[in-house]
Image (cartoon, rainbow, N blue to C red; front, side, top):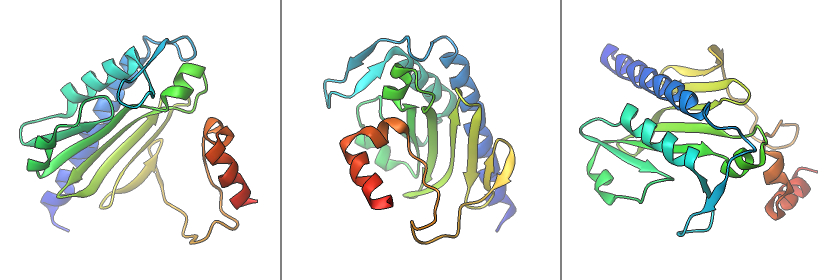
Length: 179
């Protein structure tokens, strides 16, 4: 691997970490479980003022010239496809949990280059957890090196899912599959 590639991945991860820190700072203005949600006209899913503000903060922090933007909180602009590098974000991943006061929500950010994810980060301010990584640098969990399981079957695996997702109808089918 070239030094410039490693340097580029490291710089991208540093940008992601700074943006996640800024997002957490903004989210501290809101109290999970005491936030009013509205329905998105497009699909009826919940959205809060926190979603919108964090989206704006991430966009201001991350987006540079010659980069595209794809966010759950913005209308899709196909102009992003003209860029080699595109940010893909969910400013408040788990809005239903955030509104319900369940600490199973996060801020999710990824950089896609040439159609392939090259770096990403997920931060859950409610639990203090942060995952950062890229193919070249590996993954860290709360600053310590981590790795994915080498298991190739669900049998004997630990599967993480939000309690709310498991209580949904699709969660019932998922639970039956695991049992």
